Image: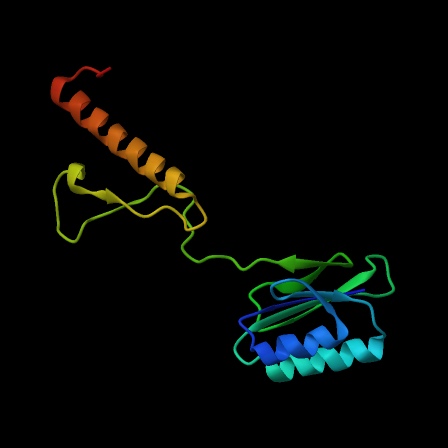
Length: 152
């Protein structure tokens, strides 16, 4: 069994792959062929993919019974205790908690500070909710500091 996923590849490559495999979705090909044909297909994919990405999963002997091949892909196969897993790329600068930054000017009080953007993998609603909660918390802290009593 072979599964090939290509992204941002020329139509010519997709046409070549449909000779040997079935395209079940845009850029996703499945099929069954010999190891020799599989290797030749992979060589052809690498030759024609250009700036696109390619990922191949194929059956093989062994405990896991499958193997991965990648080309120009962010995800990479990693061996962990004899199992091959796909490691997702880590995003630099991904935030685990809210941090604050100045909005370009120096301010004495924190009321002029704005929160940094939430991580990209958050939904728009979650980003808005996080921003709203942080702003409300800041306003509550300010009003508590002015009156000396906690506000409700």
